Amino acid sequence: MPDNHVAGAGTATVVLNSDDTARVTVNASGLLDGAPHAMHIHVKGSGECPTADAATLHNGHPAISTADGLPAYGPIGTSLATTGDTSPASALAVDRFPSTGTFHYSRTIQLTSDVARQVRADNAVVVIHGIDYNHNGRYDGVLGPSELNPALPQEATPPPALCGALD
Image (cartoon, rainbow, N blue to C red; front, top):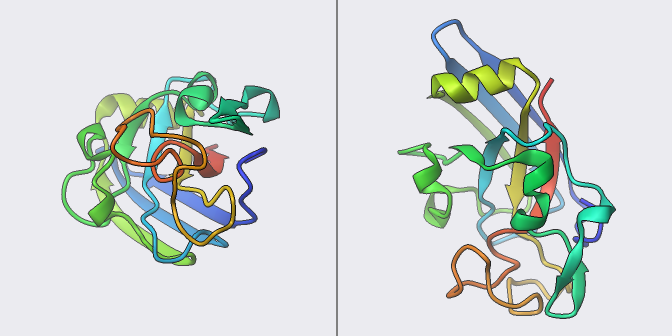
């Protein structure tokens, strides 16, 4: 993700069955260790990851937030939580997302028919959130409060760390 100061890398695979169950596999590395990384399948944007042009100033720093990226990747269709609910309602269930800098996620989940349709139409994007913008080893207030939950720092919730369009 341009402007978000992440040197990570990752891959994501979504294999859909005819009944809209999906085997989702995500491998990521180079993320902030010891901090939660929310992951989602976003749908109904333009089916791509945002470019550097999407960055705006957050607390005086150029970065791409979730709101900045919405035109490219769209709203949350599915939360890639490690256990339990995978609906958009679990978007910030930080205790149920990976919290290591390198991880392997693999889970079979039921997608809604709408999300499955978006995946099949190449209009879905996997986004891993949570950045250490200032490289101090923790989520803090350098980018100000979160757009999604002002009680949390912006680094912890909206900013996409890694993004990949599903084909």
